[in-house]
Length: 82
Image (tube, rainbow, N blue to C red):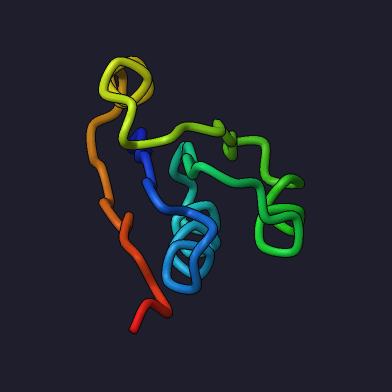
């Protein structure tokens, strides 16, 4: 079991990735600058799932969030922007 952080977790790819990681038995920490309940609520029944509201532009908060994780999936980005 790995400790995995998913940054940009509330997006389409992040939500699907987190479900697969939790199903595989990994400890998963989701961070995003917003809480999207329809994406994250279904994952709350996994004991290995955690969420942190972190703005990845805040380098101190980001450094504290990623400190204890073996793997980071960086999915942060602007979507739907022309």
